[in-house]
Image (cartoon, rainbow, N blue to C red):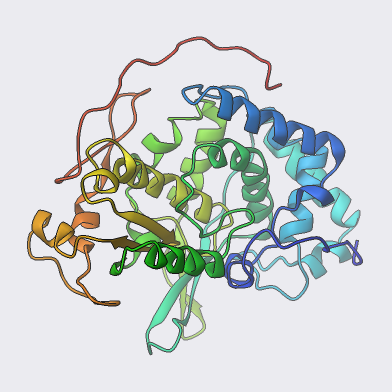
Length: 363
């Protein structure tokens, strides 16, 4: 399996691929049957925006799904998790990769799979002199997380707004910058820049799950996600492992499923931004988001400062940031079946009229 094809057009920016520690999902390299399944999931989600998928778990441990997941995370020369297992070690074990994937399939099918602790390391954060925490799941956990991404990505991609560019198929940093340039050329010269500090580490688990449950009700799939969110964190100091720590917020940077979950959470902020009564309407503003950085362009220089209290400024061009508005835009968990509301000036009512009809034509 050392000569697996990678070719085709990149589906994520180069920076994203390195950050994710995995190869992008490229439909032209997936088996025909798996491509068809993802297409059906996507079409179902697009045609029925309020449909909640309730039978997905058995798709996750399909042979073709696990093999596709392995090809994207089972790379040579990558860091190991707490168990020390790497691709090189897997290939030297009896049965090699085939036995490794069969073991994962058996555990998932028998619902015996348990996520292991996440190994935390620190890497330089650009040229800031600061360090970024990076969580490294075990190789087995990365494969299962990637399998979940293979199945869930087409569902949530059907919902995501066009304004988001980070960790998404066929989208990149350059496209985000090009959109900002086009916005300026369209006569929206004022730029507001908001960077959500420590975003991955600060997402509340209960509110994140409320967002996921807007589209997925399969308890086994939701259980996998909760398991990864609650997985203990293990850090090393002076060559020794510190006692594991737990958390009630955050999804580890470095986790394969984390970028998708981060996009799911911020999707509802973007929805509020564009809904009737949101800044896209009353300020004629346009939003561009890449990862946790939000860029808003507008004709009205005073639009956001007028509606937020004492924003902490980080100028990008001619005006101030609206980080205060984003800090208030935190989804709170509501009853099952309702979208999360948002606090602050940009909040409002939602349509609670949801279909209860289910069918299996996405099988």
